[in-house]
Length: 239
Image (spheres, rainbow, N blue to C red):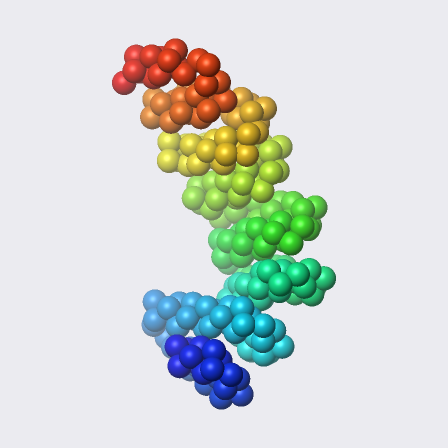
């Protein structure tokens, strides 16, 4: 894959495509899971690199050769992001729709949720906010099917980052576990965007764990700088 990327950067696109085609075929025959993941990850990065130098036709051709839906959807999303960076918004939107349809085919719910989160982020970057919201809701349903707290919190955090405050609040309230590590990430995302209303709605959840409450104090100071001393004093009382 590294050789193919080097060739692509020097303009030897046909040779790069041939090497990548061979790499994809080889990767699909690998039985060792870890090695397979590493090789496919490299191939996705090469596709991204080819797209970033403006060779979109070639990048799409390579991406569509990837058999596994999760890696194919990731490659398509990266191509779309490269398109958006040069102002090819309509083309990016079309490729992202392909990425969505591909991600929906992923069998494992955890992989499907992860792929949909990445696509929602890419959609938001190209201005497709309503579509991003719809895709993120799909990601939440996939995350619920996994029952994995880390996956559920990732969706909630992404909702906060993308400005879907109602979703962020709703999802965070539904997640019962791993709050100490993950709820502060949601609160930080809301704070960075100045979403005080959503932050205050989630603040009661912080009362259940001391560490979470302490972390929330830093966010409170950002929203209420005039009361920083009083908030800090309260935080010291909890320590």
